[in-house]
Image (tube, rainbow, N blue to C red; front, side, top):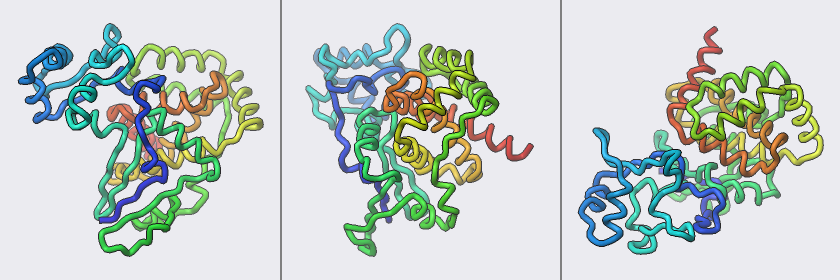
Length: 302
């Protein structure tokens, strides 16, 4: 097995109560069966709190957050997890224990990473200002690669027998009224994570010319390296989708996602927050990912 890690992977550490945008909100968290059984039989105040927080349906047990209950009820007044405080991290369900780490498996490759929905991940990506591109470390069972070996994204694709032009791995902003109009109409078809997402997309759609002008000014004034790394990170995370979708569709998905983050950054500021919000809305909803990739495939076939 060959394992690939973005260099930020081993630096990652949850910010816990210092996080301004906790991951313990908004979405549905599936609870693995062994942990669910443990929670359902646990005694004491924590056991009671867990059972009150769990929703059970034909697919299993879940923590379901809603407009009425947007935050996990297992957070205390300081924003710390009661499960971790009482049981340690081993008391968490698999999803909570692993998040925001992800692992993708392709043949003998293990592609590891930390999701961009987490503000700590995005901050690490931005902190590495010495590199305009993603850098990866590599480990393997046979010790063919040394500890100082470093890869770029194109090298990762080469390990999968994709010998692509280096320009495909570079993000170039494309502010255009017609392009932005089409992109925003497409994003309106995604399932919104909350009302704020719908409000944001609709607000951008009201004055496309302003958005284009703002993006052009932003590109001229700001360093674009964070957006280039985000573009590459999106490509990296979706490599396994090449089993079902074309490379062109994956690139379109990454390009549009990065362009949307640039648009919102130019209008609202705070690019790190915009990156995390996009990831929460799109990247962490498998239905939205499939919807978009199917759209790009259909465009290619048209």
